[in-house]
Amino acid sequence: MGVHMKIVIVGAGKLAHYLIHELEQADKIVIIDKDPDAAKKFADTQVSEVINGDGSSYPVLSVACKDASMIVALTNEDETNLLACQIAKKHLGVPKAIARVNNPKNRRIMEHFGIDRAFSGTQILASMIEQEIDFEGLRIVHRIKNSNHVLIEFVLSDKSDACGKSMIEYKFIHGSRVVVMAGADGDTITPIGSTVMNAGDQIMMVCDKRDIEAIWKAMVH
Image (cartoon, rainbow, N blue to C red; front, side, top):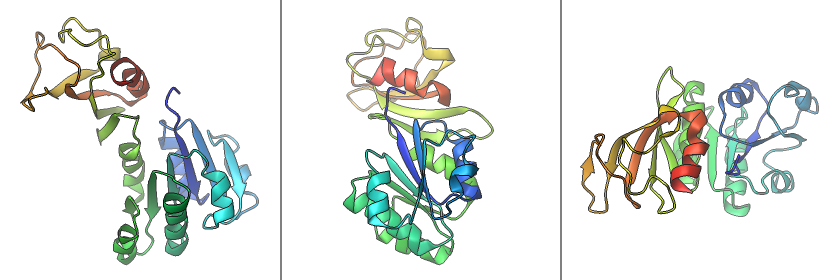
């Protein structure tokens, strides 16, 4: 991928397996788990590395989190999840932290201590992480249910070939389409075929999530 996206996952349980199979945006996934046999569980997945150790330990996290974009703590212990996320964010510079909350009463505590997202339902995890992943100026704002399509938002780069072209003239990637855009004056419009795109326009687009990187390269980077 042109955009480096490394995710560190603490906890090698069923939830980690679910997440890995759902997540397509990461080009490197590192798992931390105390179980010495954890590596065997992920032999046939896209996991890059499995580290045997305590995911709430600074020495372990300092190795795992180098150049990481996000940490996701999925253990059965809220204290471990909180510590892992806090160390990664506050001391190791990891931009995003998401934690599993086993006791819903602890959600506020997690958020109070700076965790970006705290969740208790497995079904929202993949969607939550996709929305947090940031392609340096491109953001996923909504995942469309029962579909590979997502709604993305970005500001059109002055380097893009789309600048100065109308919706009809520009060749959008794999049928992606602009649904809303706003110019420098802040006025929001629903574009038509003759609508011209200009550098600095804020654009909301529906696309296949597999095309996000290509769109990022063509219109944002």
